[in-house]
Length: 204
Image (cartoon, rainbow, N blue to C red; front, side, top):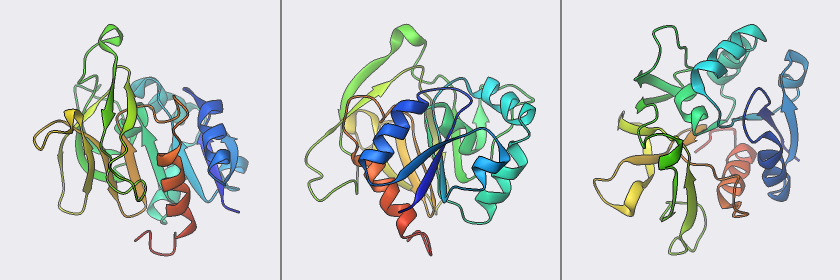
């Protein structure tokens, strides 16, 4: 059984852990080096990306996680976690750091303030054989992806429109979603990530 950590500095840690365990993984919370060393993969949940960046430095976790990502550890960022995986951040603080795990430009709070939060049914490529069954996605002060590099696959766009904002991506062992897949009881994206971790020799 694969062990997947959930970064436990902010966000829906318990909800992600429950979803991962329902999807066949062992889930642990990660806020120490010793816990990071136990995991085969890591989920970075939602929260506030600038605060998360500072907390990672305070807990001396930024560089160890960066080294694990460079070494091929599968990683998944949701909402603020998407921002943490970006190679470039728009509307971020000058001192904000990210892991650059995905070749993408992300805009913070692109969907507006918390009062502008909303839900929609998304078509998400690859999450199961029945891709016609939509995924109910919750957006809360969510980012979106402005552009991606040639190695990044687009899994979903807001509004299911060919030119809609990009809200789910994957490249190799790294994936990111603008929305909160841990909410609502549909764990297909968690199952997709667990399967990715199981196939981690290439993440192909």
